[in-house]
Image 1 (tube, rainbow, N blue to C red):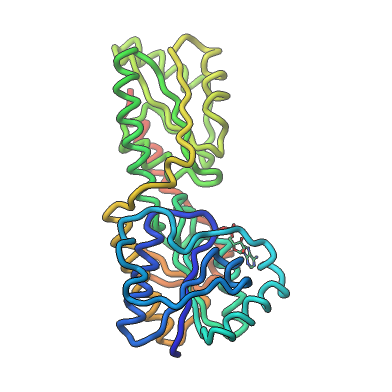
Image 2 (tube, protein in one colour):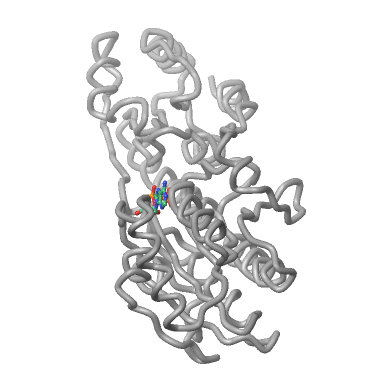
Length: 319
Ligand code: ADP
């Protein structure tokens, strides 16, 4: 194997650049040639591919987003799209790939592996919703961004004795809400994985107000409902001086934390080692602080499980 390609696909996440850098630098260190593929599978099919050198990934480790851009390209789910991509791989002499993205991106990577082009997947998503990894690249940064926002909202909540409902990203997975809820000292955390009762939330708020806690933060994962709807439902049970705040895409941007940069660097270098061993169709993870691999097929048949002990903890630590 002489030449590898790298692409980022699906939703962007802080730390993707650190992963691209690690793949490129490790591969060059091992004497491989490296090609960057812009705009995910769309760019692969369009031949938007360039040769990287040591400087291509200079000054990017600290940047959010992805220097290789990302795009949705549903056509890649069809064999016709995949064959067009393979034509470009052949044209550029690319024999293997590292794909940084989520579950959808891994499907594309597995198809390429089945066609004889080994591809290794790295979990790049803020949602932390990929099985067989405790953490994904970008998750830590997004949690830290939410916590910073909660801290700021807490200042104004305390000054005016208000209750803030803070909506964070997470359609199917409540991880961002759980971790930022615990780290931000939230009164309540509402996630898709756990049922909730608005009346119980209201009773708890009322009780804590009676005990002298006049402000509160409730963290809500977007997959449950929108913050203004939730605030409306809650207001039926009393006057809690409610305000709804939607953090939205703010949480996707920004410089990656040290933790995300280290994780991305470890995973990126490991992906190159796996390709050098002739492996493909594998997803890299980190489990109990050890790098791990699982076949993508196994991964598609599993479901990510949020750390639900944090749900109980968040509730036990608030009054
Ligand atoms: P994520 O990778 O974050 O889950 P998407 O689900 O949008 O994001 O997938 C990213 C890209 O991966 C898609 O735009 C498409 O190009 C490719 N992809 C998604 N599903 C498949 C599939 N079943 N087969 C091949 N490629 C796929």
